[in-house]
Amino acid sequence: MTSTYMGKPYYPAWLDNLADDVTGEGAAWDGVIEGAEAVHEVVVAAREIYEFQDFHYAGPCGENSFLEDYTSSVSGVPIHVIVLVTFDAAGKAQRLVVNHRPRSSVLLLSRVMLERFAGTPLAKHWENTP
Image (cartoon, rainbow, N blue to C red; front, side, top):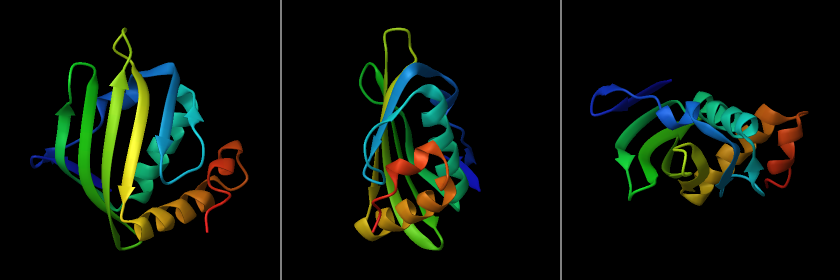
């Protein structure tokens, strides 16, 4: 998988700077994913499932937030993503809110994530995927 922004390789620096009590919320899963280890694992899994990430924007959003806007595909199906990362007072990523669209792509990603996390404690976030 390749991730590029403005023609250069991109890696989200915030991913290696998660607060211990970071939370992740998104339309592609049920509930809130809690804790640095779990959030990191889910983000890394999604990045592995994406066939590519073509960033339109990755940068500051207000004083304590970071915004990512990118397109990708999952199993050949296009998916568009907006990620808002909010930082705590220490500068660590405290909250991630991930919006995937369109709905059909969200459901596909959810099914693939359910397969990826089957048999793990994180599977509960995808068990109700249609």
